[in-house]
Length: 365
Image (tube, rainbow, N blue to C red; front, top):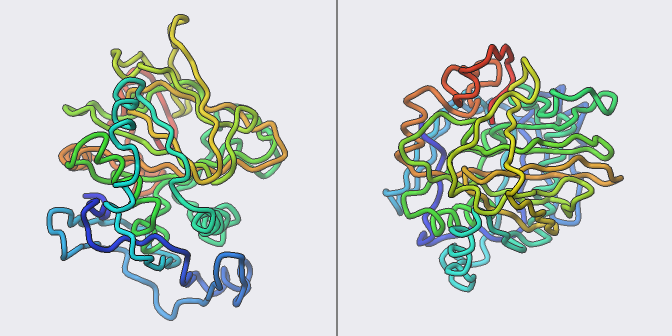
């Protein structure tokens, strides 16, 4: 199994504009119960219709203009809608050319994290927010990839996850990986890690108002199997203003340059991991505005606080690593829960799961 396509920064065509079409391909009962055809938003008109035939469970993406970045992606998920972005004639390389890439790289290498402001426009944010809300309200049924990332805590709200996590949203929305968020974050990831960097997986992490549940301190490498090449970067994009009160990112600068800390389940029988940071390590918050993002290395210690406000905190996360390591992890049977959370084999995940009797069907990160 290999990841879906990540276009090279030098590709000729880059999608960078508003949504042209969102065609819902839901079961008739879902469309009737959850959607109204002909609905409009401030972004664009949404054509919603039930599909006359369901798409194949196997999807293949290929860019004939750049064979070096052809990726074949096989998944059991059938896309439930299609999103298309209009092209404004801006390529990824043109977009990246006017950004301070050298400064970004120095900051990332030194601190293990990076803040990039306004990676997507307000108009583009509205498109992603609309799709995000369809996942949350069930219009896009991602139940096989949805769970409570905060299940290690007592329930805070009725009928709402403490922390809603949806793995592989791009498998549910056709062409989502062709949009500006995947393309621009992918270009930055290549600038930070090298030209062999490709898309690995994506996820949504949502904190409802007053859910007040934190994600404990951890390093992403603690969740993953040990790989020969440790290069990896995650992009955390805010679809709402993110601050200390509603759950913005916190980082331990420079922790990616230190050995991986020992990790353990935050609560016995739950997959959520945590680690103990040395007292002398610095901890800094990274509040960002809607449409901005953070990048952090797989070895960078980080956490997010709970949402104690009246507002939503929606985050879209994308992960990138060298193509050889994506192939290696898939050959080892580690795919970040792509075949469904009930099929996760923790014996193929991080070392912390091998040291404990963790009985859970929840997804590793």
